[in-house]
Length: 78
Image (cartoon, rainbow, N blue to C red; front, side, top):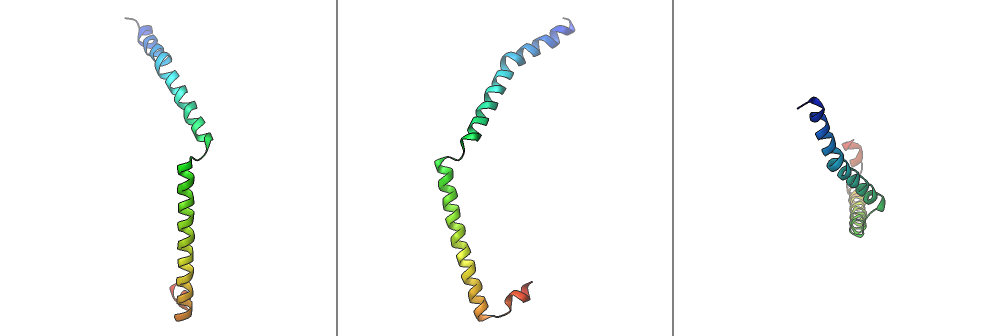
């Protein structure tokens, strides 16, 4: 067997099997990325936003309580 066979066979296998799959999967993933968030993702983002708002309110309430009961607590911790 000559050296050209060792180069030709893998090249043909690559061009017939690997390259088309690579291109199909590449453009499939690009099209999915351009579609945006799914309904599930949007719902999860809304739930997380709601949780963040609740936690922010809790932190503000705790800080107000600390301000009222222990004046100057911020200066001692920083």
